Length: 252
Image (cartoon, rainbow, N blue to C red; front, side, top):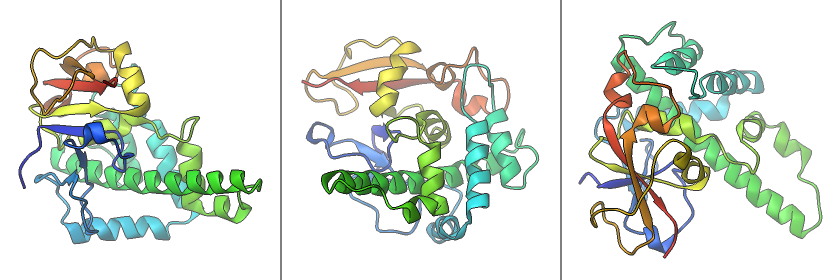
């Protein structure tokens, strides 16, 4: 498969947008039929069948297990005071790995697993939003038994206000598989918050498949986009430190 010039993040199930029709979304690698608008990186460590099996295991998890995974994700939030691969190490405790420092291959596998998990959470939030919409139309409350399901509860509690999962863990894990030569198109809250850390301006050229005048471009490393205070100094430097191109779409 041809490597696309630009990837849409953080959503792996983004809303349709005709202006972004030429941009690819990131596919987490499971065996479901992949949409034509998606892209599966060649360096995923899990084969499609193994990725699908992991995704199925998420469906079988109880509330306590999902809470543990959600809490591990919460502990891994990529904030200004957390550096390098410590975020992945904290999630690694959930996966039975005491440390991921110096184990880049293990970090790759864990990063893909967390992309699969966020894909599933995004799916559940979509179902919850649709159910909420239907209940509002019918002036009914959301059924309690829906929120009692471990996966639904975990997704709802992990979401920020407005039912939107934090974009930082998604982007940080996706960066293991997206080359610095590929641009990242930010959407949603990510597009709103990136200008706090990066300086956006009109693109100098029409590269990365840009059409129309509604795009803004910024250049900077992943650590800066995530709000870190400085460059990474460990194995994580392979993804944190190279300069990347970040795009936002502001409309025509």
